[in-house]
Image 1: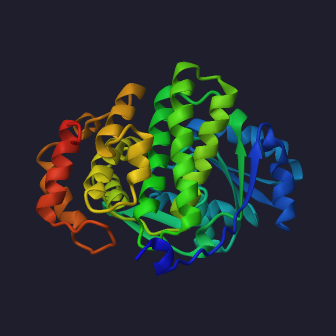
Image 2 (image 1 turned 90 degrees about the vertical axis):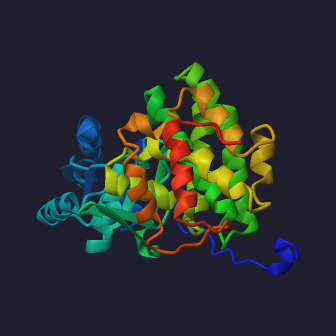
Length: 354
């Protein structure tokens, strides 16, 4: 039976998207379009200056800045942010940054009912999803709900021109992982599939040009377009093995989010390619091999290839594999703890998947 004969459900895309260059200037109008009037601007400490500039540009629409977003969305940080949101009399949030800041925006939204305008400055792709991962007590928990999804996403190519090469590459590979998982998800559909393939292809074509010339505006636009497509694809399908492992390594071992995704991707995609024909298009995009092709692509870009280089010890691998199989989740290829342990060993060593 073909995928079409089996039927599918396409839920539609609910988030408003504004894409282009110079679109940051329209954020105030997007807040007002939602019927909101007091936006708390969010960022990490490293982007505080940019957040302050955006708040100043918002004028009367600004309710101030909270610049304490952290990786993996710690609950303690969220609690401080919610207190700041309420003290400022805000009625919405504007998240300026990557996955850490947009994740904080989502966490505030779930606790306050606020509207959320996301302004991504990396390619990581949290902005189009209904997924919230939060860390507390050494564990990362993930939940999904339509209310978590930002109401509006403003993509501004200009904001990516100064993105350092390492962050560019790692967040882009993170986004590619979103697209690939969407292809073999149990609730995959043809629309999401087309978006995922086109998004991955945009990364393949645009990312090497960005690495060669960071201020190549045309290539930056192509890569940002790929980020939107892959983020959207994941936002309307079920997460599987790749994201589960990334959450385990990030939430329980403190590994950096984008780099962890980048290293795991060839191994998780190659593992699942052996059990599904849905990754044939990815194999063709990367020269005939899913795992090996993705590993080669990452290597040419100068991406990290070894979990060992992120500070994970070989002794940690047993515990990580054990945590990863504590709960069941959808995946095209069945696996046990030994399978996960072997996959993590290869990723820890940086071995090229066959």
